[in-house]
Amino acid sequence: MLFRKGLLADMGLEFAYFSGVARIIEARTGGSGIILKFEHVRPRRSEPFQPLRSQDITPEFLEDAIVALKRWNFDILSLDEVVERAQQASLARRFVCLTFDGGHRDFMTFAYPVLSRHRIPFALYVPTGFVDGIDQAWWLALEQVITCNHRIGLVMNRVERHFFAASLVEKYQLYDILHAWMMTLPPPDLATAIGDLCGRYGVDLAAVSRDIAMSWEDLTKLARDPHATIGSATVNYPNLAHTKGTAALREMIMGRTVLETALGGPCPHFAYPFGGEGSFGPREMLLAREAGFVAAVSTKPGVVRADGQSNLMALPRISWDGRRSLRALRVVLSGMTARREKRRAIEPAINYG
Image (tube, rainbow, N blue to C red; front, side, top):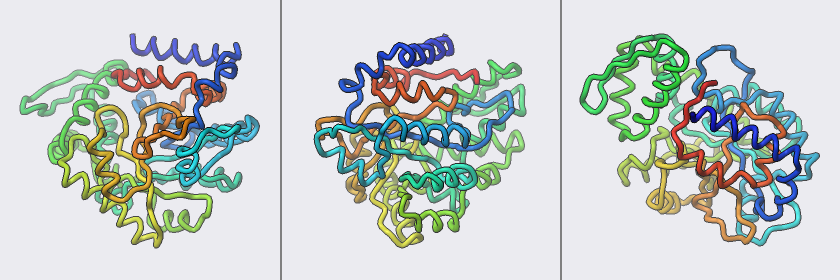
């Protein structure tokens, strides 16, 4: 049913594009502009089980999107410029800001050459623990466990549970169940749960985490690029809403301090790890301000307000679904879908690839 809803929603985007409805109401729905959130940029993969497929875009799509944004007469802004626009009444031209989460190695291989060639501003949010090789990409390890096994057992809430996941549909359903459960765990409990699961099924969690991360050499190169903004996403990328206040503040301060020390410059921008419903709230916004950040972005869908009253500690972002078309991107940029995207963001998603 949820898959069907997603399919109908995407059909609605296509209709909105071809009918011209999105362009007609853009002045009313589009706000001052939109911050887009991307994650992996890499060639399309062939594996049948890809629960995180929506987080991938191809280098070709990124190229086409940048060309289209210029053709559509959007201002492509840096984060500093977004902060300025967010505090003033809307100008005639709307803006787009391109942000990339995770500090993934594929960014340097596939995204950065495209961005450099076009000489446009962009932002990269980095959890420094991955760069240092100490963090755990538990969501990727979970994917590997489910990919390679048809029967899976683990301890959930102190009870031994067993699941069957032989078919592709069952694997997607199980991933959603276990991912949602792990998102609710405090960091120590999460480390125990994913460590137990990886130990049972022979997945090298350290190797999985290490293989996706860019290096300090990569980040140093980016820091010299005047078009690049490097922001913090904590050290260990915890779900801050399920992290004790002192630990959450420490994650924020240490992530920023490590970046500033290593790269020799200020780091005033922050991204809440995961960033959606259940991962941050008023407490985390206060902590981000206490940690000294000028602005913080979420993954709660929405537009930057046209009246200059956007909350700088909770700037909305549209998480781009890499399975969608360039036409759908144009509709999303109109702001027409922002309310619907907010509703979809809090629904449990079943992704059938």
